[in-house]
Amino acid sequence: MKLYIMKQSAVDYLKENMRTYYINYYRKTDNDWIYELFDYDPFELFMEVPEFKLAPYMEKKGEMDLQNCKIMYTNLMRISESQASDERLWAGLCNSTFYKYCRMRWDYQSKKLKNPDADADAIISRFFFKGTYRSGFYRNTLAKCWWVGHGTYQEIHGNKFELLDALGADDLSTKMTDLFYSNTFASNPTIIKGICKGWKLFTDRGIKLTTREYFRPALQYMNALGGGILLDMLDEDEIKEIFVDYISQLYNKDKGETVFVKTDDSYDDIEDEEDIEVENADIIFMQGNNDAEEVEEKPVQEFGVGIKAVGASQKKDLKEARILNKVMGKPKEIACGCSVILHIVEDDRDVKYDVPKEKNGQDWYAIYNQMLGKSIGESFRMRIKTYIVKDISW
Image (cartoon, rainbow, N blue to C red; front, side, top):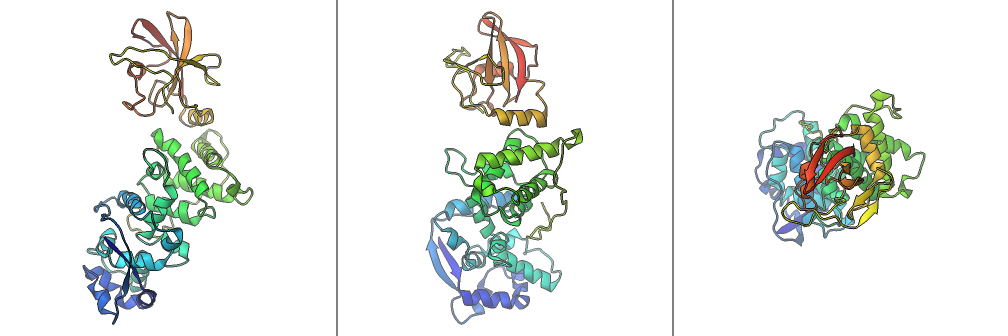
């Protein structure tokens, strides 16, 4: 698959004369008309890569963009940040290899003409760069996908785009603008990842937070905070803590919590979109027929002080748990992601379990099926023992 850049002279000519040629993007299904404008080839080969396709058309543009962020970055991971900042690259891809796709992304095959100046400016933003170089590549149809993929990609086992998935498809265009372009911290990948991890804490638990009421105000707060402290000196977890704590204040403001930032509910979408759119278990069950075997016991540090936890697990993030208890309220019944203290009647002792966030994963064991949905005071039997639910927390 050949990828082409657009020669600078061709870029300059088309942008300077876009009010003459913009109508071609509405009417021409292929890019032959671009070649006809010049007495030389306006494109030159940039690189060859294995064949790949962008996401199929979806009515929900946010979902299409989310998939394209993964596709563009995964397939063009070899290019440098310097190359990815070059207008000639993205003008070349948008006007050659992916010309038909970019027309489809913006519905130019059916879009009606409006104002010549506005329509021409939109073409420049989507197929070239408009404004400063940063605003340029967060407006360009394909460049923004590469840069958002680049900003959320993690070299981890499993889903390397889990932070992007946490941002989600809803209002993705607005989130891209606010997180990666509009604020002073946008160029710092540590801050970006810390914020994404904070947002993920809520989405992992199914807490529905809107962009207007939570995401944008929290970013405004982080931006304002950057004027008083050096956010660049903090690590991802410290950024995450600040971000999550402020959202928890917004979430509970009706309970008397202090809100520090006057939020702006307006949406200045730079793309001018018409359709703005933990733990492992503390017990390991080794037997296949619902039999359970206890392994090495380890003390619990805070939740259920003095109570033994059964099995080896990842360290429980107690600060995160306290925030979730504050935002969501203590759970009334056992659900995925809960921490639970059970009393074993026959042994007259208490044990603690951390229920995994997802059911039927590799750390999902038989006892969780027994305890799900139980409330404090309820009991169940497992093998020859009786378990009574004493406490539930996030």
